[in-house]
Length: 183
Image (cartoon, rainbow, N blue to C red):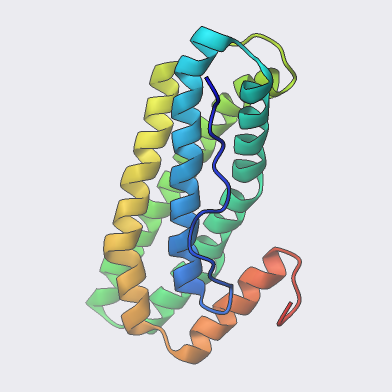
């Protein structure tokens, strides 16, 4: 059984289009969650073989870097820009949404911390049990979280944020990743 490890299959979009980049990141997160889900039965049959080790390493690498940047992109740049763009009672609704999404980020990070410990063991070739309920809780929460962002948050951002504000967010996202303007 060859364990498929997803790469960057999402559309190739750059940080110059930050909303599209955030949506593409969701597709990559879905791919990593799918790998995590496939890893559960793979371990039962194959154990911590080379495929399992590679998959565990790839999932850890993704969630330790790109997913953390993604949460920061939203919390540090996108959410404040959206709130700033609103006035009156609309801002209250938006504050509630961004606060809920931020709480979900913390919950996802807590789930990730527990899963990462098991994946670290697997990546090192040591036998470990990846709890199906923990994987399901993590991937389910991520799926619901991303759906809300794609159905509510990103369309709202596309409507409300100016090109100049989107450019500023894109530059901040580049800086977070250690990339200069235009690189």
